[in-house]
Length: 103
Image (cartoon, rainbow, N blue to C red; front, side, top):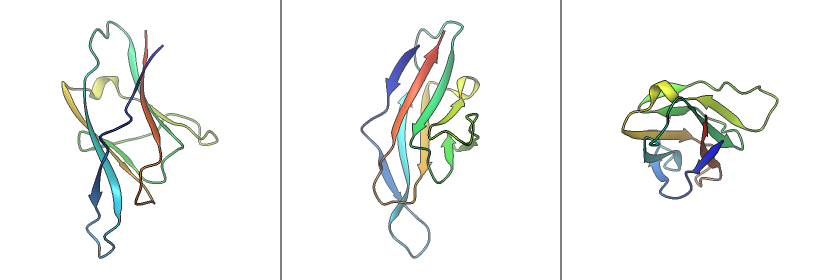
């Protein structure tokens, strides 16, 4: 497995409600190259309290509810430039986000 960490460049988006605290964080990333026949999983740790979106569409977790890692296979949804958005209950982003490439 090859891991790509999506650490920096998370941009807070202000909620539409009267509460001006950022509740959604966004980050752009490029499609991993040389994928071959592998699969790409998105992993978020700890599990986010809100929803996860890839290119404007919600992504459902495939990981068991009992684990603290949110994981989903995003291989068929990847395009050359992607926008990942994660909803959080905090005005700061405190998640480790990574792409896990499994051959």
